[in-house]
Length: 325
Ligand code: ADP
Ligand code: TRP
Image (cartoon, rainbow, N blue to C red; front, side):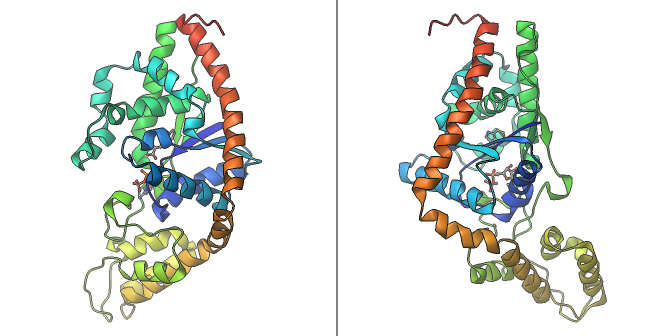
């Protein structure tokens, strides 16, 4: 199965990104699928317009993925802008995409509501994402729940293209979403997101993680009183890390009373620190080898361009774009 996902380099990776997307990326890689993963730096231009910041955050994401287990011998790992063909496909798909479809895009409306300038790139974001998916003939797209609409739009646009040109030129992808981790809550109980400042970062120190977990918002039920695990942010995060037997024990302790939120937060911090210990050890080593990281991306880009060129030959031919190269 051809699997593809893009990682928007918009800040430091957090456990919402891990459970919502990265963990599935790595699992699908290790199951032996044909995986293409890229850093969506063209998409990031819609919001990051500072050269040093964009470069920095792209290197962070690349280094982080390698530290967490992305294996360049198994997955094609590359920078979106190393395959500029995708912008050509974006234009061709723009010509198939009804304006009314873009008007429905919830992520555009959310971003503008949060104060991002409404530039054309932001409006066209889903079409570029459709091009990303289509150009690699992706069948399965592992993403968090907030990206489901973008994958559905991709299906709509690819379907329209195929109807217009009367052939099955483009592959229609399916979203791959794990329902239990569709929305990981942040320390304030809203969706965990860089833009809300409520994240628990993957590449923080153990001490910083413990502090961050201690800052999770809870109600003020006294230590000795019974508590409801199902409405507690700490418990919602614990669910991601503990085995079912321990989760049952913790839930029983909540209900029995005498178990404080502080206990739960301490256990959560321990688990986060354990889960990412390996990656945290590898990260600084890779950070000292930026040339290695860039070699991986260069080689990934080369492989990705091969696939993209083959799709573009098919697409150009289907549309009647005469080619003289
Ligand atoms: P952020 O909201 O922090 O800016 P991104 O939009 O860059 O995160 O998301 C990158 C990937 O991680 C996407 O596939 C997204 O669906 C997933 N993701 C982000 N936050 C969460 C979350 N809180 N729960 C589940 N998945 C998430
Ligand atoms: N929009 C995605 C996000 O915010 C990133 C992305 C860009 C992507 N192109 C993609 C995800 C293609 C999946 C497939 O996380």
